[in-house]
Length: 232
Ligand SMILES: Cc1ncc(C[n+]2csc(CCO)c2C)c(N)n1
Image (cartoon, rainbow, N blue to C red; front, side):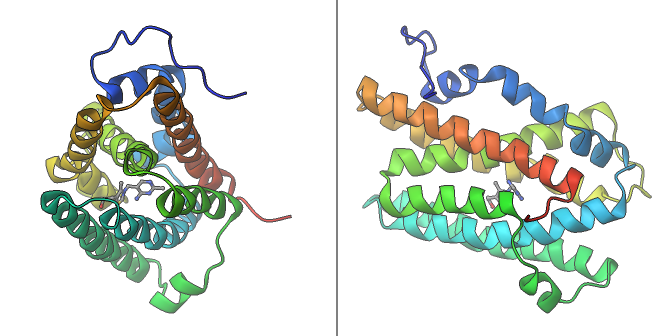
C-alpha cells in the first residue's frame, strides 16, 4: 500500500516530516541484531566480511547516483558538493574497504568479482532508477536515509559504548560517528528542505514513498548481512 503522509504538515521541515512518518522503522535500525553485534564487537567475522563485500558493491553504485545528481542542477555550489560526495564515497569508503580487505585477506579482485546479493541488487536498482529518471528532490530523498541512518547508528553505538582499542570494528564505528560524515546528511537535508516549499501535496507524497523504500532497504541491508542472504 502506498505511504500516506499525515494530512497536516505539522512539522516545519520536510526532512523531519519524512522521518517522523516512519519513526518505528527508523528506530528499528539501531535495534537490528547486526547493528547491536557490530557495536559490541560480537559480530562474527563472516557476517562483517559479507557486509563489507556487499557494501563495496553498493558504494560503487551510490557513486553513480552522485554523478546523476550533478546533471539535475545548475547551481554551482550543488554541483561542487555532489562532485565532492562522489569522490569522497570512492576514496574514504574504498580506504575503509581496502583496510578490511587486507585484514580479511581479500584482494580488490575478490571484492569486485563477488556477485551482488539480492538486497544489494534491489537497493541499488531503486537508487539508480530514481537517479536516472527522477527529479532532484526525489534523488535527494532516495539517498537521504543512507547518510542519515549511518550517522545516527554511528553516534548511537559510540555514545552507548565507546569502542575499546582492540574492538574489531573500531575503524567502521569511528568513520560513521565522525562529524564529517554527519555533515553529509545535514547538507542533503538542508537542500531538500529548501526545495520543499515548491512541492505540491502529490509530489510530497511521492517523496514519502521514496524515503520509506530507501529506509526499508537500509534495514534489509543489515538483515542481509546478518542472514548471509543468498539467491535461490
Ligand atoms: C548500505 C549503506 N548505506 C549507507 C552507507 C553510508 N555511506 C557511505 S558513503 C555515503 C555517502 C557519502 O560519502 C554513505 C551515506 C553505507 N556505507 N552503506
